[in-house]
Image 1 (tube, rainbow, N blue to C red):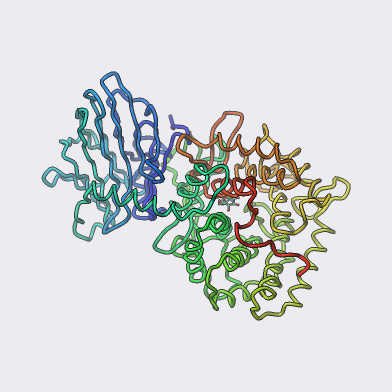
Image 2 (spheres, rainbow, N blue to C red; image 1 turned 45 degrees about the horizontal axis):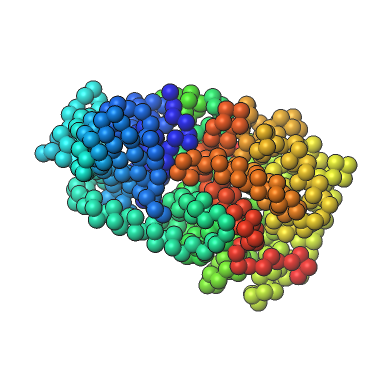
Length: 602
Ligand SMILES: OC[C@H]1O[C@H](O[C@H]2O[C@H](CO)[C@@H](O)[C@H](O)[C@H]2O)[C@H](O)[C@@H](O)[C@@H]1O
């Protein structure tokens, strides 16, 4: 039986991430990178697909958990009939190798403990060769080698390594799992005391740069830390989420791999980071972007691998039964080959915001923006797959066209404000043409709402973004009408779905449904605030905050019928939504903390 998604806490070292359940089991870990094959995949099957349990023998969930201060050092605390014990879990920042450190700390009494390490490489399909080297355990399979280092006596049982021991008050018992390429010699074992101090200090110091001063400081800080943990430090790439194939509905087939860098999701993340003072991250992402999309702008992909890899072929892993039986489990993502026109607008908007937020100009960045806009100028009239990556026929999605308008608008603004060279009159005309077409073909006057695509009956939560990007002001009656219609037609128990998969004869060509989309529900709170319904916005925001798990994680979706988080976790989209709404409702600007909104009249 799978643990609820909200049972998981995240560990990370800016190159990989682990998910730890409340019962002390690490059920998800991919090494050496976020997108490597998992060595623990119990999350998507059962213990046989690999996991690492460290908990009181009595079992059961931790009595309480928390992250230490502003860090990703996790403390799980059990109160048992024999006494109290704490397990401290963290991943030290990457040195020579990747490590996961688990330290058992006795608080009171004498608590019997149990450890079970079940390494299964290649997503649960491969049992490594295991041997003892002195007191340590070595495991090898193909390119991967692991070491388990601990003072506790280890034994083999079945195809797992186990230990049974007792921890007394004041005792500290470390377990260190180290991964390294199997052709290289064993790295030096990590010094757990020093690594703990350095890891905690790194996260604290990163967070000390946060400039958010609004009403929800703890919630915003924790979300920012989790967003930072989704950054692949060696390249500056930003992931959409740390997992693959957590289902959008229990038992459903809408299970996708999110361990890649979507330009859209990264742009949203950057907007949240820029708005809270993190300009350096924008610089690193700009470098990543310039490398990833270097070459012909017509070859822009909507997502890339962590290092800019273009092809992410989608496969199913048929030996895994899926989270709570939700199959298939997929790796790779076929959406990588789609046309999603909004991505041009999101990239250009983010580079524009970065410049306005004080990021030092960079000539080739402006050359790139011009080339992207030139290409978009010739393509914006094409139908596309839209920001929701529908797998049905391409359509003229209103949000995609509006983001093409954004691309032209930001280019005009940049020339005016920063004096950069460009055919500003041509871009102004382009902007006006797109605006007029969207208002004529994407707006249904009879229902007083913009529509999902030209001529559609369906609506789309992404329409809530129109006033945010400056396409029309909040007070425009068409915007008020759209906010009301979207809320009325797409709400599920007060939370918002992205769209109705059944409308217009099935827009996404996928079977089954999905749950409420958390990012869209944050957009609804913003929209209510924007149209002057501040109290309703705040009630909705507080409800969303209450959906976070005990350590602040939010996945992609939430099913109010079963009261559970669903979809990949932690998801950048949702965390970005939280940060931006907290800023907006605290009186900040919805787009950045620093830049004035460009005016459509410029
Ligand atoms: O709805 C079908 C699509 O679902 C996934 O896409 C969603 O996640 C992306 C990453 O967060 C996000 O950028 C996109 O807007 C979402 O719709 C999946 O990745 C797609 O393959 C799938 O077609």
